[in-house]
Image: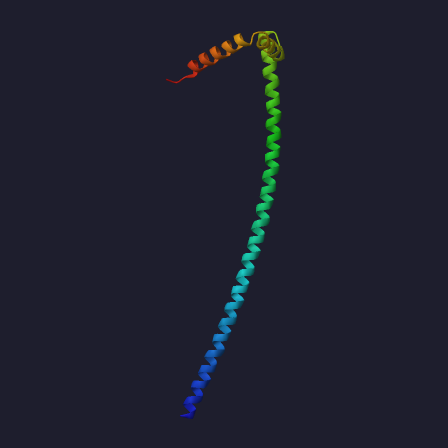
Length: 125
């Protein structure tokens, strides 16, 4: 019976030792997993920041190109207006300002009528 008791004690000790090894392996695995996740997050954060910087640079570049194109088209429109009317747009603006200053009521009536006619022209009914 003592022999049987010794074997059970040895088996219990072996199981206890195995359980401790399994627990230690679990802790090591968890620690490595946390480390891998942290490294992955750091890399993802760095990559996102890099992409954000690149996107910002590209947006600034495109914004500059758009502004250049707007200025180019604006100049072309001014040239075309001057070509068709014989006067630059600034002269038209000056004349309109003078008309409003000299005859504000007439200018208001003209603006209302123009708005009404334009509204009627673009109405989809």
